[in-house]
Picture 1 (cartoon, one colour):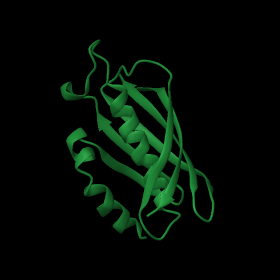
Picture 2: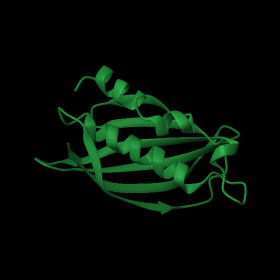
Picture 3: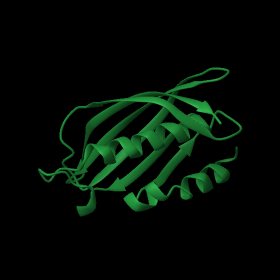
Length: 132
């Protein structure tokens, strides 16, 4: 799949559109997805919701995996470790491929919150993708 095809695939995700997410980087084995922490993505304490971090982390990892396969991929499983509250106005998820096998791809993503120009890691994801 070409990088243009991958970007068109990302653009078809209504969830990413709803979150205001954008794919900002794409290369062999990596992808970066960014999203604002807007009023519709907060939890009850005023921090960004973990679901926002998970959603863009999963997408970043999935599109990183897609750079190593000819067709589309889907998440088989994904684990998240939440490191600190999502305090910031923007999240950056950096997905990367750890290992590509014949039928699965092991991936990770680090999600950082940006506040006052400073990035702090807020979540780590690890998962498995399969081609569909």
